[in-house]
Amino acid sequence: MILKSEIISYTRKVRARNKPMKELRYFVKWKGCVEDDNTCEPPEGMRNAEEVVARFQRGNPEMPRPREVA
Image 1 (cartoon, rainbow, N blue to C red):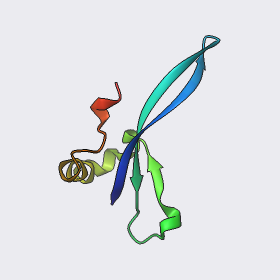
Image 2: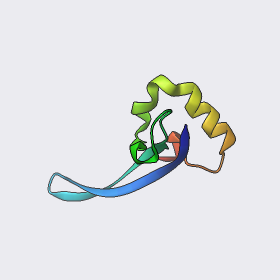
Image 3: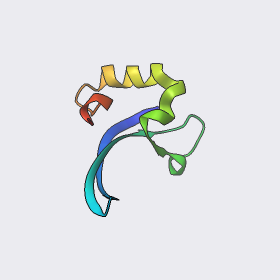
Image 4: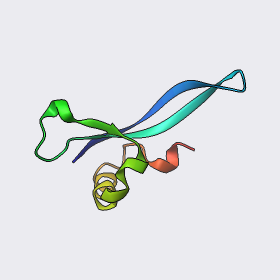
C-alpha cells in the first residue's frame, strides 16, 4: 500500500558545479511487514505495481505525480 508520495530535492555535483535535483518517491507499507519495514521507492521501483500506483493517484489527486518532477 502506498502511504504518500513526495518530491525530494537535493544538490548533486555535475562538472564541478552544484546542480539542484528533484525526484519523486513513494512511501510504501509492504503487506505482511511491520511499520519499520516501510520503504521509500522511486517510480522505477514500482513498475510491477502500476495498478497500485494508479489507484493511489486517483484517490490522492493532491499528492505529487511523476509528471510534476520534470
